[in-house]
Image (cartoon, rainbow, N blue to C red; front, side):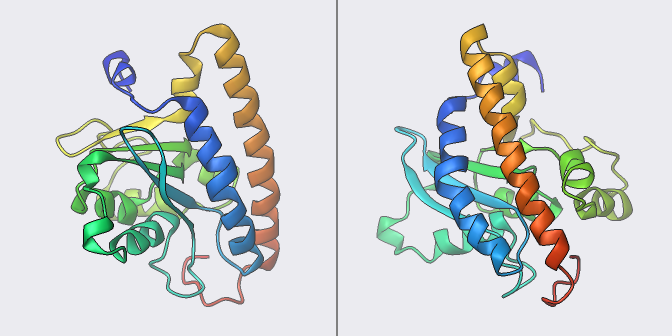
Length: 203
């Protein structure tokens, strides 16, 4: 991510972490208890960063319902007159989106997304390597090989945004990120211990 790209980030780190901690994570805790993965997403309004909706992975119902996909499904179930234009919205994901979710974000017209954990985190810390394997096997892309600042959208890594904050805000944000990492690690252990019996093709 270039310095210019970082400067164009519009969602404050503290608000993004609030959404992950208070809106997405409680849903994911229930989802993992039902056999789903640890991925979740939320949609916010750009003007005031208020929550439109939050969702979590629901692959036990449908293997396409990744956290992002399930959030988009719910978003398009909103009555048309109540559904904001995607150009007016911020897309937040707990984990860097896979190729399926990258495509869905593109096709639905979002011009941004923010993520907490990287593809490498998904592989190394959460024992879910499928995002990187698919990018490599299908698209011949190495980690980080897709363009995070392209004609459709710009992707923002929340830890990188946090690292650019003034010292006191940076330390607070990094402490919160570390705490969220520990909570997600616990959820990941629960998922890994229980996976295999829920008819998820790539578990």
